[in-house]
Length: 205
Ligand SMILES: [Zn+2]
Image (tube, rainbow, N blue to C red; front, side):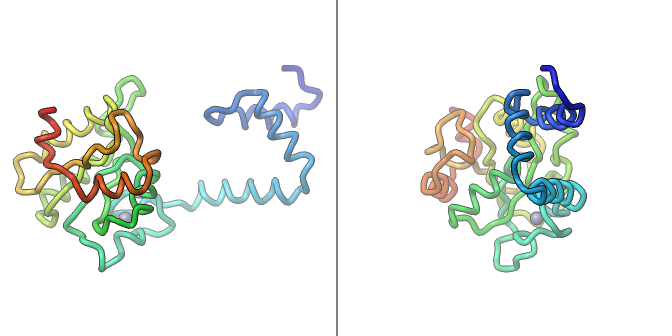
């Protein structure tokens, strides 16, 4: 792509680093910004920078938060002995949207995926095992997507905590195999949490 301006080229180059944004789309977005008032670009830049500089991860559940302990973990009315194990913030949002879940979460930060170079040490698994060993957890609901990576991650964690007194369950699969949680409709997802099944039963399937 030949550019008439180095500034334009640089903006397009940065924009096209984003997933799913090719050079052509990046050019379209940049040209769009050029046609808008300058303020719009400033607000966008400030929102992105502010997020990047100031965002925190909750010290308890590792979810994205503006404060050290997120709203969910800080809420006394929730059941702190019940943990729902999810991949990332999108799953927390999806489950919260159902209005059916009153426990807290543990956000892994991804799934074990050798192809993508993600190993167990890059996830918050140690922190989860520590919570289990602390004795203050009654039940863990495994709610990772049922992809190969999700199953691998589930099993890796299961092996580390299966000999404790913690009840291990998994969300019932009204959600079909391979579906990502965030795409499940709220009613189905809500029901699949309420009608969860023992983890061992899911393993034998
Ligand atoms: Zn939290």
